[in-house]
Structures are given as structure tokens and as C-alpha cells.
Amino acid sequence: MDSMVLIPIMVPLPVALTLVCTSVLAVMLYVRSLFTSTDTLPKLFYKESTLNTHLLNKSSIMRRPFRPSYWLKNRHLQTILGRMRPQGTVHYEREYLQLSDKGVVALDWVIGTNFAVRRNSPICVVFPSLTGDAHSVSDLCGCLARKGFRTVVFNSRGHGNSFLTTKKLQSFGDPLDVRQSVLYIHQKHARAQITAVAMGTGSTVLFSYLGEYGSSARLKAAAFISPVFDATQTLFRGMSKFYEFFFLVKLKLMLLKHAHALSEVVDIGKSMLSWSMVTFQKYVYCRGSESLEQFLERNDPMRDVDDISVPVLCVSSSDDPVCRHKDTPFDIFQFYPNMLLVATEHGGHCGFLESIHRPSWTDKLVVDYLTSVLEFSSKGYEHSG
Image 1 (cartoon, helix red, strand yellow):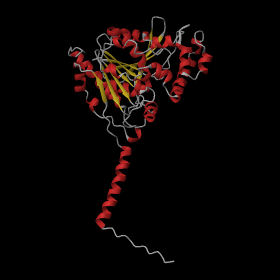
Image 2 (cartoon, rainbow, N blue to C red):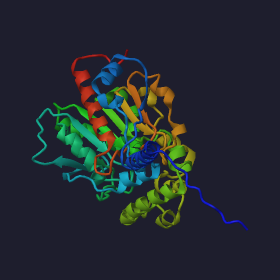
Image 3 (cartoon, helix red, strand yellow):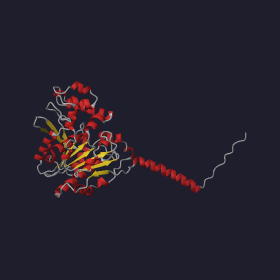
Image 4 (cartoon, one colour):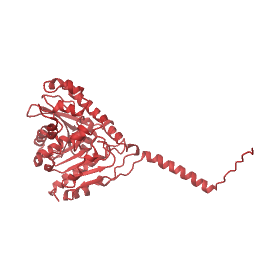
């Protein structure tokens, strides 16, 4: 057998250098893409109006791309890190407000020498998620406080490590406690304009409040981050088992803490053994012989959306693993001149992180929005077009 002869292939030096440099550059660009952000312009849904024109002109962040690092484009990472990563250090002073039925809600006021507020400084009431508390929204509260807002976190009765003085908890769409709290804050700071921000599942009670009380809500503006528009689908039928399990564990720990106070009206045993959000809510929150359908109708956050009279901003992500993108009512934002939706491609549920080392992209967006609305109101414009 003839021996094989290897004939070297001669490549001209310029061509070889070009191939090597191109390969090195390609590898460098790929590695860089893993640690740099990608540009994703948010989509805006709104009806033309004087208010929305003013907002789009004043808030540059609405026109700035949301730039998450490459590895942060995963919706579950955004959601989990948005919840679990350390928040900035913010100090609170707790105030307990007794309600008309002798129930108590906890108001956590942001305090600190670095936050300069005046008697007429605007107020922002922050609503954490159903399983959150003041510390879970510290980054947002710090951002609001640095911009001159007197900031307070609303903790529903029994939530936020507070005590329970009644034989009931506030259901997710019952705005009565919010009403009394807002009236109290308005009376305490009569010269201040009041705004509100709600996070995730905390949006249900704020939406219910705005719709039920309409023009008498005493709020100048409201913003929602990853809001729940359809509670039936999100909280009961559409949530993945992973996130449903997480929410149920947190709610059961809270229920267990108040088991003695609620034992006469809630079947604690059945509630603790339930691993379905549907049955858990039915055992804990349904009134007497009230059916689940009646309960859902009574607590539907969008039941009175036609009566919302204040400017509203909603920020949602199409990859939200908790609130399904297809449940977003895009039509209402293109019908009502006081409502604006900012929709991003990535961001998860209450994440919107561009970097693990920086606050959420929505923090500055929300502050810009509230500031712009208050400026608009001070000029005496009408909300309609």
C-alpha cells in the first residue's frame, strides 16, 4: 500500500491574520454580549390626550430602552431575583391605625435625615404584594423619598408582621381599609397631594379602591408595577404551580400566626392542608354561604374600571410568569385618556432589573410619572384630550 503523503496547504499571511482576528473579535463580542445589555424599546398603549402628551414629553425613561443584561433576560430569574435580592437600607417608623370596626392596619413611614420633606411634600402610599412588606419595597421607597415624596407602606390587617384585632382578614379586592387609611393620611397632611404605587398582587386592592370611590378617592395619581388585571385567571387558574406554592406558603405562615384570632370564622385545618389557591381563598375569605363565584365577582379589581378618575400608569412585561400577557386589557388604555400602559418584552413579574447591582428600571419610571402628573395638575390642565 502506498504511503499517504500530506501536502501542506499554504495560506497567505494576510488571509490568515484576517481569519484569526475575525475569530478573536467574534469571541470577544459574544463574551461581551453575556455581560452587556440589549436594547428593548417599551411599547406604549394610550389614548391621545393633553395629559399623555405632557407625560411623554416629560418622562424620558418611557422612550429609553429597557436594557437587561443578557443573562437577566430570563423571566424566572427576573422574578426570583426581583423578590429575593437584597434591598437598599431604608428605615421605617410604624404607626398603627385603628379602623371603624376596631381592626388595625400598619402604616410604615419612611424616615431618615437624608430624606428632606416639608409640610406640603407629596405623599406616596406604597402597596406591596399580598405576601410582601415594607422591606420588600425598600428600593422603591428609597427612590421615592430621595425625590421628595413622604413615603408610607400600607400593610393590610394582619400582614407585614402586624397583629390582628378582628376576626377577619382583608380580602384581595376589598378597599374599605384603604379608604379609611387614605382619609386618615389626608386629614393628617391636609396640604399634601397623595399618590400611590402598587406592586404585583398588591394592585388588586388599589384598583378596587380607585374604581369603587372614583372621583372621591383623594389620590392625584397611581402607578402599578406588574399589575393583576384578571384576578380569576392570575390568582386562581392561571398561576404556575411553582409560584402558587410560594404564595400559599407565605399566606399560610401569616394565617398560622393569626390562627387563634381567626379560629371561630376560618377552618384553620382545612386551610393549612389546602394546596390550591382557589380552595385556600374560599376557606379563608368567603363570607358565610357565599360561593366562590360571588366572592370573585365581589373582589374583581377591574369591576369599576369605568369610574377610575385619576391618572394611572401600568408597567407590564410580556414574559411575566405570574400575570399572563394575554389577560392584559390593552383596549382600556386606548379608550381612557387618563390611563397609560408601558409594556416591555422582558422583566418578569416585578423584576425589571437591568443589572443585579442597580435598582429596578421601574423605580425611576414610577417616580418620573408621579412627578410629571403632579406638575401637570399644578398647571390646572384637564385630564381629557
